[in-house]
Length: 163
Image (cartoon, rainbow, N blue to C red; front, side, top):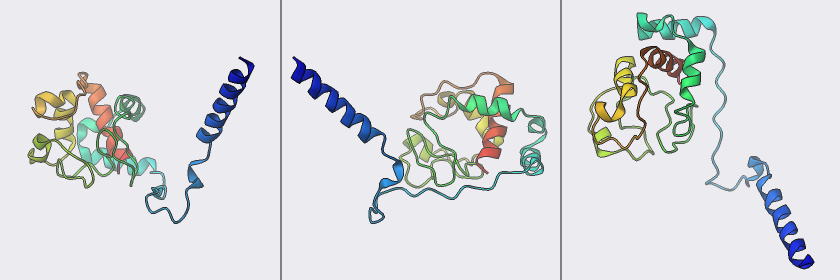
């Protein structure tokens, strides 16, 4: 019994050690290792205000902190950083102005590939209210954001965070 306990303890220690290795230990010759995109300079308050003004008057007074908190529902499926990975959903960096269903490297539903729209604040508002109502056949299972103010804040946050 003591030998089995020792083996289990050593095995657990080996697993913990393997899991705690830093992510940057990949060999420089490993072509499949992802490379981090350089961090973008933080936006000034004036830059943020311009982005929000460009979205329209409804977004000028948006609460970016609330939008960021609402994004918590999205972050299990989406990333925002330039060069970030696609996960369950596509990376959202640069989504404003992008034609739906066209981000390279992501496998969209046939419905999304055929949607034919370009993402803007109005389309995101319709989409985020109820994705499956906005586009029957989407593979996105998110139920939506029913509260108008929360959607406005989320869209404003996305505009700033993905710029």
